[in-house]
Length: 585
Image 1: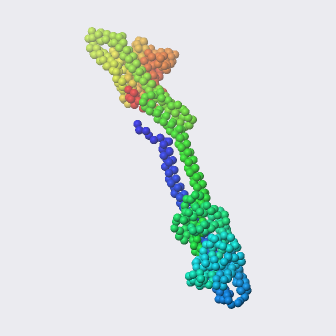
Image 2 (image 1 turned 180 degrees about the horizontal axis):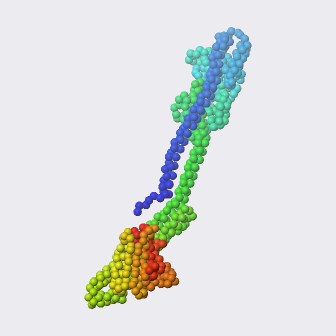
Image 3 (image 1 turned 90 degrees about the vertical axis):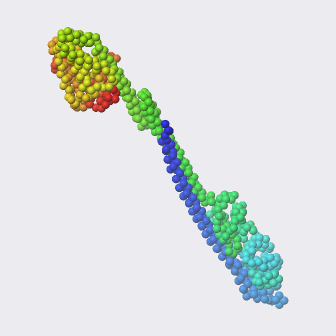
């Protein structure tokens, strides 16, 4: 027999099939959420960087314009055109221009230095009064270079120590050698300005913006994580960078999102990076809670499935095994009650059913045994030498008297009687056949006694009813032996049938000697005794067989007949027991 899937396995499959789409959908929505968060972080961070860089470039552009303003100043132009051999009030001119340079320098929010170099006049004027180095050094280094220049090794730049950015305009602009330079207008600012600005815009503690140029060390805020900045620079150094953008990379500090925007003034990149773990930590926490919940639900589902298996599947298995055992004929099968739930009721009912089936089968077998015993007892009674001798002597004497019709009648009835009683078929007979046997039996006694009459009045619809064989004859025999033969004079036996109210009745009564009422009560008590206590009475046998075959309410009832003798009523129910009789037969 192929093994069928159990409820437990089906439930586990259902749980798995339920969790798979849930996990798939959650994974998809989680990925979408992470992508949205990353995009929002990227857009927000790039927007902040672009805004910061716009302010940054605007300030630097303002500083760059100082050189243009200085080159167009009339006093500066006048000073450039004077010959150093012509005497003039140099100190007064220097003071005037230095004052302008100082006023121009302090007009910016950033610390800066504006310097005027006049090589031919051997003059250097600066807003930084501490400049003490040879002016020709700066002219030689920067005069012919364009744009903003990062000077990481300034000399004499004592106003603010450290690296600086400088920009200058040389005159003439088309000079191709230092000797051609007549004037150089220079503006510079220290990188501390950038660091201070980045300190103010270090927004949420997670970001750490800095300026990046792969040729130099990064320029960051005062609390910049130098190691992390170098890791980010190594990641960016291997990529082709456009004007702006962002990348997500795994570096030593973990997974980070790197954002960059290129400065149009300096040519450096303003870079910021955000550790993705810190940004996505709430999502990861939610993920962990979700998977923990899924795991808990799965564990609860497994526990619930196991409890269902233990409290439902196993009891059902017990019931199935019990039914299989009953099917195989083991009627002693019983189910032990091991749990306190609704199956206790089923187990109890099953055990009761099995017990009733066992009792019913035993009763059927007992009835068959009793039927065979009744048949054997009837055979023994009818083959009794006295009954047979009396019948044969009747035939002999009647033959001597040459009463041929009586001889023939006795022989025919005797033959029919013994043919029916000695038939060993294990099947029920119709009521018509039972009445025919009784008629043969009564005819034999009528011929022998010469004073016996009988009346049979049974409705036609009852004649084909199935009955166990040899149920009616013992009652008639009891009426003749204990009633008619014990009373002189004409004897009468009357058999009537009745049907109605869900049952059938056959009433056998005689006008024989009868019995006192007290003796009648004792006989009724004997009918209710067990097999061990009473096995030799044919009337008891008929009563017990009726009760076993047709259930409670069936059997024999005894009363004093209006004819003067005994009245025996045989009762059986009108239900489906007749079909059962045919099956049992």
